[in-house]
Figure (cartoon, rainbow, N blue to C red):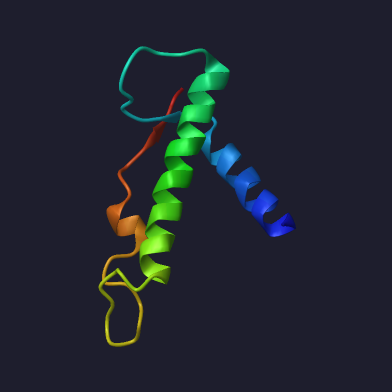
Length: 79
């Protein structure tokens, strides 16, 4: 459980001020940050789930053909 909390803490820090294209109107700062945290969590968790369930193409050595950094979009931080 502690590792999960620690991982989410890192995600919270990364989400702070991350700029990405969102749908719909701009929300308050706390809600925008939560929206970013959930987007990041869904992306990383989805990738990990596909890999763990054997649904991701892998190379001969068992490593994925595409690393998570190969598929995640580029993000910027707000000034």
